[in-house]
Length: 240
Image (cartoon, rainbow, N blue to C red; front, side):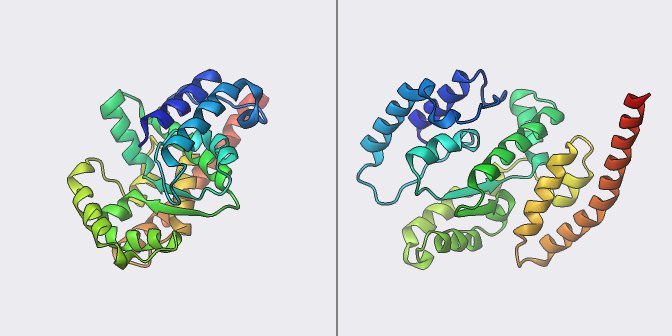
């Protein structure tokens, strides 16, 4: 994380009347608007000062899911890595840290994910799942290295840092794909997006992950039907 780039993202959200937990609705063309001229110049100065001489660099901030068009305008050749976490785990984490209700947390997850997917549509991006990193960091490290056009085996020092950094004890809230689909507190669109992403980027191993995904897909049909029937009931009530 780069604290000054985080500050830029916070400023952008504030300028449009929002914050990280109350995302604003951006108007068309907001990313190049004159209203952000001073923020844009400040961002350019930070990028030039800290990364101007770097052929290869990265930074991480969840708020970038919302502000990505702003950065894409400044860095048009940027590639994106989307690290996705199960919305049930997000809800449990935010409940403990911020006291948020699960409905609010999963709607936030959906808002962030929808913006990130829309901003990276048709561009080079890699989707990595948080649970996959904890389960098989070496396999995900190889995927990331391949995406970046680098040989993972040649970077033993980075591998050692990754091994030391990833600690399963850091993940206090674990949930499966089945748990996400069957969790009533998770809003239906969030379930749909997570399951679609999980199915699209299905890992080849281990078998337990595939079995969990198959079970989640089996559960998804009845949930979708229940949601459709609920929507129809609501429409009939509104029509009377």
